[in-house]
Image (cartoon, rainbow, N blue to C red; front, side, top):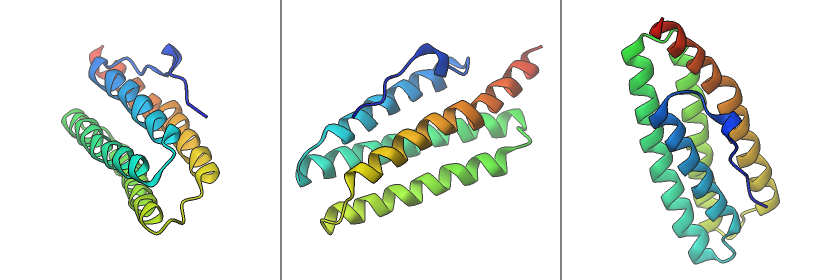
Length: 128
């Protein structure tokens, strides 16, 4: 299973959109990994990049005075916590890949389509 990026996922902020596309790429690499070594390596890359992306997004929200920053950051923290759990599952050989595929695709599409879309609307309002 892979998650396909489409332009409808763009929120209208060039850097964030590019980072989202990279996240899709990294999630897909992880989903295609088929042994403990490649799962570990791809999970580490996905976690590292996700943290960097969240930092950029959170800095942007802070700079704009985004009123929903607390909820948005909470969603970020929830995902980072889940990614830590995924790393533990890989290490313990208890990873349930079908559940993980469902979770990652749902979270990514839901978060971009909802929380990030709201942020995009706020960015557009600030630009006017």
